[in-house]
Image 1 (cartoon, rainbow, N blue to C red):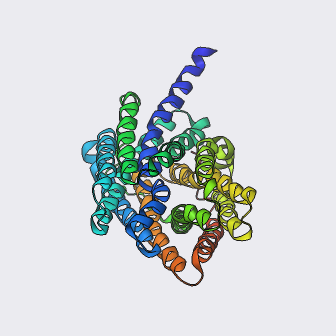
Image 2: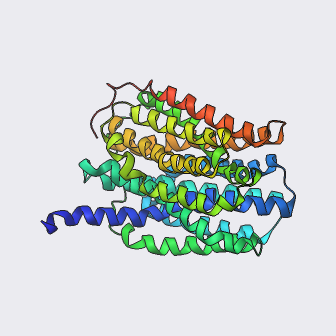
Image 3: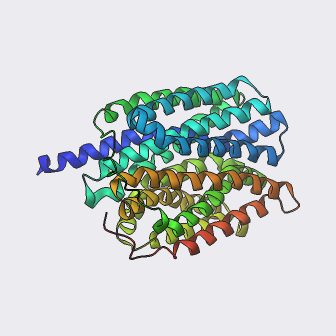
Length: 391
């Protein structure tokens, strides 16, 4: 009995190790910025527009990384691209401690996004190839990989607040050092995972048209989720709930880690993109809660709903890619989703930053986030059910 479970246990452990790539690429390189933002705004006298531009630069880099990842993965292999991406991300994060110049920081945020996309796309490819060996558990295994960003969020919540009392520069150095540690911990899993997908038959190129509605919904997700993640800490501070920042961020990250066990069965069984629609509607409610109430319970519930759902949406894109496309086209599908995601993330911080600087303030920015997420939930319902074949 134990021996029969050994391959699945090993697969789970490998996914946990691989998920540390997501902890760096998203948890450290993107989401931790929200914790550093208040201290950096106060010290460097930034507007909300410039604050949002920092994450928009990160998203532009992420887009460039997504567009180049498939070619680099074919040339270097997924494992090498994953490793290089983690090294560059660690260096870019640590370098943010060296300058307060806006242009330099924009460039470093771009570089962290570029290399973070290499990590995320190659890691997603490695996870998809590994999960095919366990079809009955594939959605859960993929969720464990994508849930790694939650590990990064939790670590950021524990690591950064004490460091920020002495200034934001030490916090960036700590993120760089933690990224190197994560790279070392992933190495045992990388040696066991398949490195390349099956090649495409000569002259065969699978169209991405069957994924059109899901891609459109995912673009809305990119806009809506990053707006919330960029400004929710500033929102908590603005309503006098600054004392909730650390528990809020830790709770959100913990919910990200457990999301595969909450949503895995729905993602595996629901037809079309029904699971994605439910997830995005949940996110819209989570984003809107701080607009309805500033009570601690409501604010923490917002973090729970967002944490449980936002990376489950990312997981679902790989689930549906594996269902709709043949194996040789999985990398193209993951790159397509990552690209529209990045485009949405470029627009999200800029739009909400401009809204937050207007008379509407942060309430308008979060309202825009909730509305765009709700639109994505509606678009996901258009995904054809019959276009999907079993994973």
